[in-house]
Length: 106
Length: 155
Length: 259
Image (cartoon, rainbow over all chains, first blue to last red; front, side):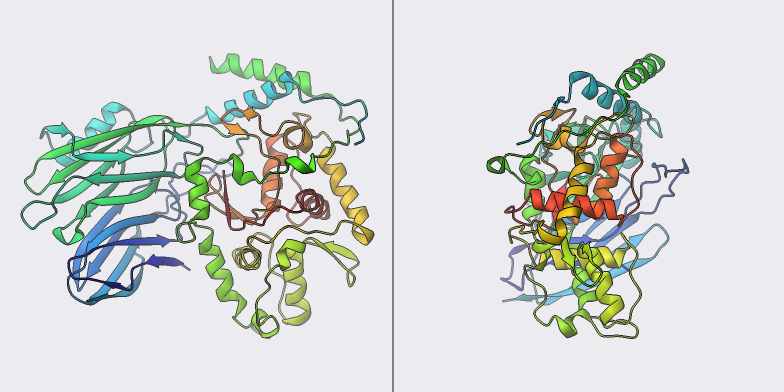
């Protein structure tokens, strides 16, 4: 079960650059660690994050094992028209988690 | 306060404690990347195009108390218009098991080419950020961070 | 080079491995009590104070959802605790007259599940128990620790105090040697804290996850190369009571960030 926390402003004026924060719970197991019996703990990471605004990709990130567990991202979007923001995380096996928020533009 | 034959934690205790912990900490599971591997990763991402230092501000704390989660902030100086914007920023390490930490992809609708994140650092090193602009030019910035080891290393 | 270091450290460890001696009773000066957050870098303190970015809130959120979710054959926590449990965590561990023993928050939640929610106990350190504990502890964030170690709790308190003050492990160190006698001094890259539990359950950077105080105690025991006790062990509950009483008047910080 993934837990997601999003910080998106409720309203923005047209042209305003808004700050967005996105946090997801994930171990981001690097594949470089060993367990208590010496066995290698298999890699298990989120590899891709995308933010779509009114169905267009406005920001994306590729994650590698050097990203800390429970990845937190702060980034920016220029508010244009009222629309839906969709956030999507995909792991190395193609499993994904998404969440949406509405940006009211005045 | 009751005190019977009090013995303070002496220097020898602390030395033994430290030495044992250092032993564990100094047995890496995988060899570290090197500056050469960083260069190799850079070539794979951007080819042999020249990289100019500047326009990229990379902020990391001078000292990180734990390499598992180090705050990183990167911002590229750009108007972020349809004609002139930052396409992507790669974060590279000369010392982590893998040199490429992350890539951030921007569009003019990003408005601002700035990202805050938390990264892993396996030891003291100088992290590098390389930005590719919409005109194809490459710019870079770097920041040195000292990663300290915890008092008690428990695997 | 590596071999040399190995031999040198083996010799040092050997030199220190004398049999445990009777413990010395030393207590913190009540005037000098400070939370572990005081010894963190500014960046880590800022992460703890950020109610959005603090990753401990991922567990608090989950706990909040579980709190109002009925169990399979019983009612939800919220059915009885409509207004939540503000301030309650600050009084735990506490003596329970029914079992005639001291219970910590985890134990109290499990007791409630079996007695009132027709549900099985949750495993110690399991995600749901950690989440519920984090949510209940969060409702006391800022409340001052006020644990009663007198009366029926006294014996447990004394047991915990003795554990804390007794040298153990290959390094032959007691908890108090670091956390009462030498707090504030440097040990490798760290500054030794006073060893309070007021931030737990806490998100430790080293774990890259939320964890209970007992997980922290297990790490401490492992750190001095002593055999760690099982989660929820009565001895650890006794240590938890001693630590809580020792930190009375400190504000609760859960979900805290620790190294």
